[in-house]
Each structure stands twice: as C-alpha cells, then as structure tokens.
Amino acid sequence: MAEALRKEVQLPDKSKEEFRVLMSCLQPLSMEQMTKERALFLSRWADEYQMDGLKAKCESQLVKHVGADAIGMLEHAISFNLKQLTKASMDVVKRDIPRYIDQLVILAEHQQEALVHEIWLACCRATEESVRKLRFEKLHISAEMPPTEHLQAMWPFLAATVKMQATWEDRW
Image (cartoon, rainbow, N blue to C red; front, side, top):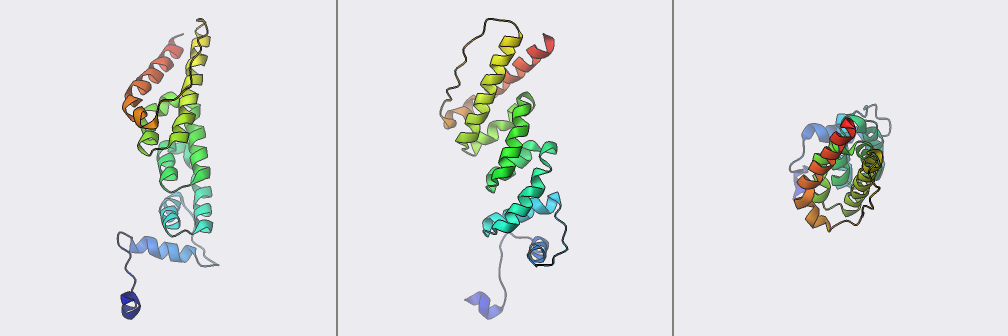
C-alpha cells in the first residue's frame, strides 16, 4: 500500500543492475544476450519470483557450462531447483568421483538424500570395479547407505577412501 503511494518498490538485497537486466529480459523483443553470468543471477530471480519460462532459459544456458564448474553448478542447481542442471552436473561428477569427492559433502549439507544415494552407489560401483581390476577376489560391496545426516560426519573418511582407491588404480 505504501509502495503504491510512493510509486516506488523496495527490493531489499537486490541489485539495481540485475533488476534492470531482468526487466529487459522479460520484454518480448529483448536483445539481451543470455550469458553464463546473467543466467546465474537471473535463475535466482526466476526461482524466487516463480518465472518458469525465464528459469528454463537460464537453465539451458547453464547446462552448457557444467564441465568447467560441475560442483558450483550443482550447488546452484540444488539451491534454485534446476532439475536439468542438477542431472547434468551429477553426470559430470559421477564420471570422475575421485576428483570431486571432497566437494560432494555439499549434498549432505543441503540434505539431498536422493543425490547422496546416487553418489553412494557410484562410489560403491567404482570400488567394486577397482577391486576387480586389481584381480583380487571379487567382494560383495553393500550399497546400503547410512542416513544422510550421518554422511556429513563420515564424508572425510569416504573422500580419503575414494582417493586412495584412485591412487591404487594408477599404480596397478
């Protein structure tokens, strides 16, 4: 009501420049280019203000940049409910778990039980493959995952194990 009288809208914690870009992008004949940087901040606005079309446009741009920053993109995807970006980021991470294992604690921190389970299974598969490659007797490795809240405390141990396994693979 007070905003209508003052003819001014307050947007606390929002950048005036980001708002200008947002408004420009919402125009039907907008010539604003969707860069990675713009897609990052516009997807935050789109999620907060439920602008699904803009959110989809941002997400399709961000998916193109997953390889360069898989963990950063994964965290952004989780924070702003970007399903395709989450999947693309997880696919990159699962292809090289030893590289990303330390940073994957963000999944436990964000209470992402389904994603933690996906990584848990990938770690178990990778461990089983390593054992098979080393020509040891094939072990049955249980993929039963502990509760998500316990994984955050276990993560340093899990990360060290995955890295050690990757080092063994390189030696053998």
